Image (cartoon, rainbow, N blue to C red):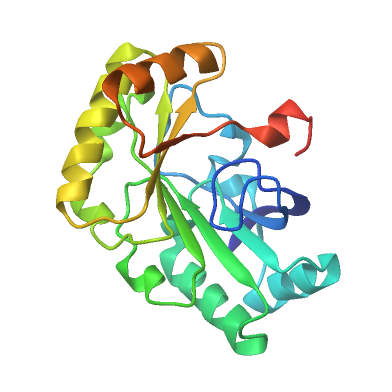
Length: 218
């Protein structure tokens, strides 16, 4: 599969392993979307990565030594077949040792992935400011459950209102996970987002800050 990088950092965003936890990131290359505010454009092209086998990836994970694993991108599900093989291989080699989280952009169905031993899925819903909302399909969110997250990147009030609307629709499908509202850097500040949440009386959302950026880690 095409891998952009494998590195140690902290979980800077929401995950069932908790923000701030030490983690090994497997960043896959290639993404099917082009969000206006994307903060990893360097991994958007499939050719930004290099070929690695599941065995080679696992060797790097073992070498780094963390039990928390976050597979991100790019977009991991753009290489869905290989992703499933990697998850199965990790669990086969050390079942119960590693906690695998997947970060995905909301454009792909996760049913075949969530059937694996995956600790957590964090799925984005792309709001109007991203320019990519047309690729969202609420059916993709039906497989999510506790302790999964639906994450919204909020750039303006229109995004916020749409996030509240979509949260309600997702809950109607039986979703019992959690919602994360992430202020888009340079567009809105945390106090403003908190004020909107308070006014909307929406206490089911976690305000998601990118801790790895705040403390200048990869």
